[in-house]
Image 1: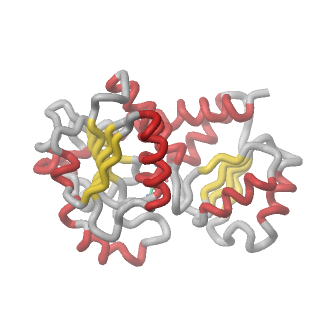
Image 2: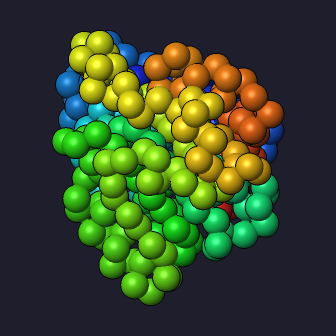
Length: 264
Ligand code: CP
Ligand code: NVA
C-alpha cells in the first residue's frame, strides 16, 4: 500500500503501517511534505502509476479535492488519511471507542467543543449516521462547514440523530457523556496559532467545563494535543481521559478498513 503524506503524522502513519504489516502486507511511504501532490506530475498520472504496483493508497493532503481526484483515477481503494475538510479514519475510530466504552450510541450526549474543523466534520458525518445526539460548540465564525451540517441533517431525518450547533460551550457540555476537543489551529494554520488562541480562550476543556458533564463522562481528543490551549492537563491527564484508547483503536480500526477494502 502507498502512503502519500503532505502533512506530518504519528498515529495515522504508524497504524496504517503496523496494521498493514500485521496483516501480511507492506507499505511504501511517499513523503510529499516538500512537493504537494500534483505539482511534480498530475494527480491522474500518480494514480495511474500507483494502481499498477500497489493494492491501495492512503493519502493525507491539504485539499480534499486531491484525495477525491486520486480516487477518481485509481482503480484501487483510496483512503482519506486526513484533509483540510475531513478526517474519516479518526471518526470511525472514535465511534468504535465510544461503542467499546458505552456499548451503544444512543441516549448519550456527545459534545464537541472548539474548532469546526476536519475532525469535527467527520464526527458530525459519522454521528448523524449512528443516530447520536451531537452538540457542537464553536466560537462565532468557526462553525462547521454548512454543507457538511446540512448533509448530516438530511441523514439525521432517517436515523433520528440530533445535531445542535451552538456558540456556548457550557450549553453543549451540560449533561454530556462524551466531551471531545481538537486543536485550535490545524496543520496548515500554524501562522494563526496565537490569534486563534485569543478567540478560542473560552473554549478550553478544563475541569470547570467538565464539571457540567455527567460525572462518568469521558474526555476524547484525536491528538496531537496542546496542553494549556484546547485542553487543560487536569482533564487530558485525568482518569476521565480515554485519548490513549482512541490512539490504540486507530490500529484496530485501520486493520478493519484494510480488511474491508483490500482483502483478496
Ligand atoms: N489523530 C491523528 O490523525 O494523528 P496523526 O496526525 O499523528 O496521524
Ligand atoms: N484538526 C487537526 C487534526 C490532527 C489529527 C489537524 O488537521 O491538524
